Image (cartoon, rainbow, N blue to C red):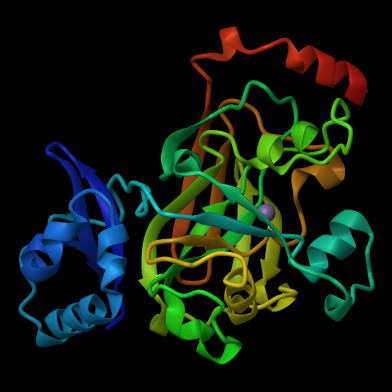
Length: 318
Ligand code: MN
């Protein structure tokens, strides 16, 4: 029986849950020995993931599940990972993104190194009305991405061992301020901090599906904005695979349990057609059997205090 782990909001605060068959069971009911550490963030669950996943497998196989605390259809899911050590993203990692969005039809991965950037814990938000419009930008864009959740510490991980470091997978959005990513007011005109590192730029969720239930090479990805399909691709378009990314990025940094690795976005980002997001827009991102991550863009309550950058950028873009 497949299952997933998630964090939901309740009247008494965050609650770590296990979802199976559409029902949600409190981790503290299903596997009390695992629950203490994972009260408000699933990171601790992944710090001992080999043992934790065996415990969950056994509890679910045993049957006689406790009373559910909710169901997946109407629960309020939170970002399952709240305070990871690292949020690392790979850029330019889909052949169809290079071809359709940038007109690059031949790309030799052997002659290129992987582009990475990082986000922060403050970038992470869950589903719902969670994304404040980044009012420092006038070109706010979407990117659907498969996100790997790390389950074992490793540095300079051999390729052959890389998949043993995967705990599971979830859905992510690498929300991007294109005018700041390609900021004409900076000398190099390429700024991944301004473009991608801002608050609420990394919605994740709604749940984490353990790696053994997922084939990362065989997942359809679909992103809709206000019901209109914008991205419709497949992980077979990935340039560097999940194990290649893990082996390579761990050359730079130690990967730690609960770390998130965003694996790049396929074709169909808004920038290619000059179409961007606005307050009130709803994004739905769907990947394989990982569920659907839905977010709505809300007004930035601090927008009246934004610097005069919008007008500058809008004038210089036009
Ligand atoms: Mn991306």
